[in-house]
Amino acid sequence: MPRPATLPTLDWKAVLESGLTYADWLAEAESPEQRDKIETQHRALTLAPPAARFMATLPRPVHVVAIAEDWCGDVVRHAPVLQRLAEAGPNLNVRYISRQQHPDVFTRFLTNGGEAIPKFIFLSDHFVECGNWGPMPESCKELIARGKACGDVAAARKKVSALYEQDTDRREVVAELTRLVDIASSLEP
Image (cartoon, rainbow, N blue to C red):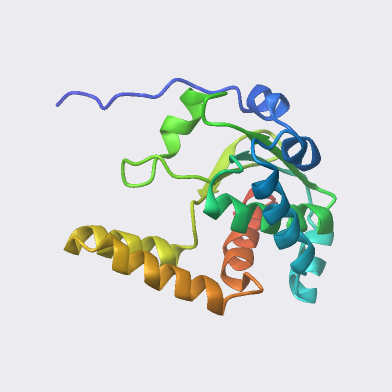
């Protein structure tokens, strides 16, 4: 039996270092209107005390490469959540890159074969890939997949919008992201 193709090894440290901080990423936003939406989302979001405590006590650094562009509605909604986690956790180092900046990275993280952002790649303190998230919470990705399967993505998107409206505190996103942070900061299996 032939061996499956092996993807080239990535220099995750170099990819991370090529990225922008949240502030620099926002400053370079293509659309002032989208930047304002992101800033509004960020200001409105607060972490629940358990999530903030968890982030404040990470046992070791975690790095996140965020593939994000300001034109995307899911980026507007989810990048502020990642930023709030980073603000609460001094051991969480996040850098933003674009799809075009690192196509070799982006093509590894397609969603069901499609280009969707944001994508957050979680790395240990030794730059070992430990997981990824995006472009939306698991329950929403499932709805979109079901919509594609039955040929009614429009109805699926309406259901996703309803879920987004119900979860104003982004509890589901916070839970999924902190789980990946927990994995990447693990001291034992």
